[in-house]
Length: 180
Image (cartoon, rainbow, N blue to C red):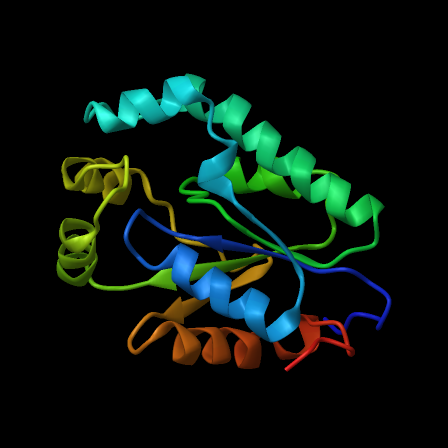
């Protein structure tokens, strides 16, 4: 569906840990100039501590965090700002919460083979989420449904190439005045 030039868009860059959300989101922000928040920064300290200890988050841990992400999206919409946010958004029910009352939301689901993701997670330094939690995320992941607003993007190549593919695939769902 084609959006008017004045409508805001919020790109929720989603996927499992290590798929490249932060890198691709940074490139999207560089290209568009839009507002940005790293969804991980909205986690309460208790969630970070749990993940750092190698304990997967459950729904009771995730719902308050997802509400914080949704509130941030609402703030951007209220200010008439297009935005980019990283958020695993692993389950459809999580994505429904992020969309509720937020017409600007478009999901950018980053896709990569589990072996590549595992290699990326293992190579990361100074991240609170250990590689041991990847399997739990892969098990929880529910791919975007055909009725959900968004796209799946192959993460082959560097972040610039992935961001370019995402912007091309989104095409008509983007404001006319987005920076390039």
